[in-house]
Image 1 (cartoon, rainbow, N blue to C red):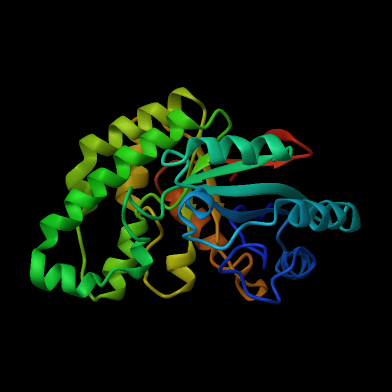
Image 2: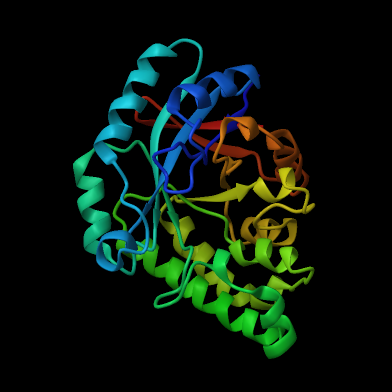
Length: 276
């Protein structure tokens, strides 16, 4: 039975757990019935230019992932991937990275707006209390604009990650926000990715963390389908072995419920569509 996890991190990510090695993720995937696993460590393009993040050891990651691909051949379809953050802000850094190794699967993401900290470090309670929910809308529209820039920047990009990244932090501050207010802006993004056969990720980290919704939530996934979107990737965004494959089936059920059935995976460098 098909089960995939296409957004995972090892210790080669600056925020990966120490025990999160390619081998440990593969072992966890096999134990959880995952058939297709992509290791997509962080490369934040800000790290060299701004020294904002610890550097990514691309050579070390390549060696360990390639060794794991061979070790688990026949047991697991392992894909060598990368999550490139803020490629639009420092495009030369992204291009250098992609030229260094033959990445099979590329996630494009935004974790921080240009000139700002990662949303992880924001005090969202203070934003809601002192400023207003309208500021979240302003930031989300900027976020969508920068995702569009990412798509224009990267020659190779397979999926767009955690579209409503801000939703996680709104929920952590015990606040909610209706991202569907910005459907027009999201439609422009969806048309851009659909034209390039780029998938949209459903990130289930917010499900296994107990928030009760994926990123993006169901209404936005339905909007994507209405715009003609069909390609989906799904990932746990695990930073340790313990959450590999968790809530993927729940994510599949959400996808099916709105009429989406095409899951993108990459096997030995070739794209495949699995029907669910």
